[in-house]
Amino acid sequence: MALGSNSLVIRRVKKVKKGGHHSGAWKIALADFALAMMAFFLVLWIISVATPEERETIQGYFQDPMGAGSAGFSANPIDLGGSPAMSIEKKLDLQLPEPGSTDVPTHETRKGNGEESSVSQSLNDLVKDELEKNNIVLSKQKNLRIEITPIGVRITLLDTPDKPMFERGSARMVPDIENTLLTMSPLFNKVNNPIVISGHTDSSKYIGSARLNNWDLSAMRANAARRILEEGGVSDTRFAQVTGLGGTVPYNRLNPASPENRRISITLLTDDAYRKLLNQNRRNFGNPAKQSDLKLTPEMVF
Image (cartoon, rainbow, N blue to C red; front, side, top):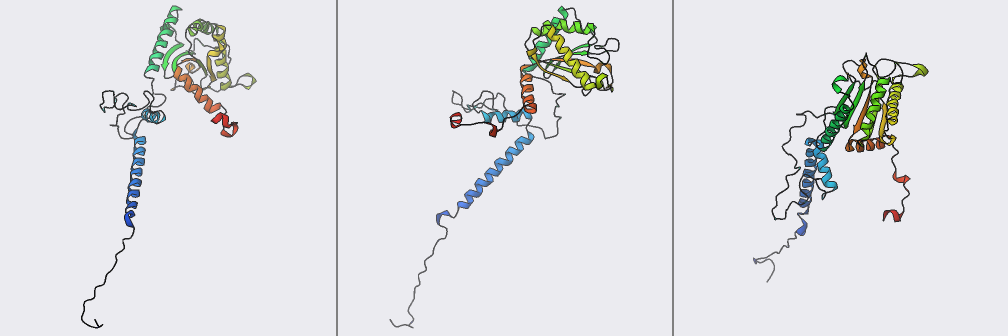
């Protein structure tokens, strides 16, 4: 057929699809990123509203998921009966108050609870019974106090204006207080709790002979109490800590110069308090090992 005629011309155009079947991959990546961000902010929210005890529970689960009592739910959510019911023991309370709406207990107001509290109560009853057997009645002893604290049972010997414990400006105990400690030594031998002794003074400035001050005096008096307890039969291995605190922790906060601030505190620690004290002392005063200090060999690692 000649060109230029009125014949019909059909033009075929081939359409090419760009990207092929991978054109939606970026959507999946974006969805994964959004999910990860949502999980991240959810973790931040949980940390901000959870109490320290709940955070420890969550941390314990991720450290040892199969450990008994270390997680909020049971490590085996499906019981032997095949039901998917979760354990209600130690379950976290998700109905938490708004942050800042409740008072957070401080170290001074926080009281022991659970097993440690019952141990302290039993120890407190034992101490009081033994004192009564030795004709030491607390109601008649103005300078003797027994208290349950978060770390154990504390026995405090306080100064009074009419009955001081030590000679003025000295670490020498008066005979009555020395006899009281010697009488209490057999009581300490009936239990195996570690012992912490702390010496305290009032806030009055004191500079004695050899340029001693309240720090020296409180430490010397704490050591004097330790030596008397050892003379009464208490083993020196029982003492976990002996410290002098000067006038930094007054017993009578309203009157730092009060005579009762001059005192000796003897605390029978619970097992948990003793472990925490050891760990704290190791962290604060020990020599932490560095990886560069360790002589590792393949045989030690594998």
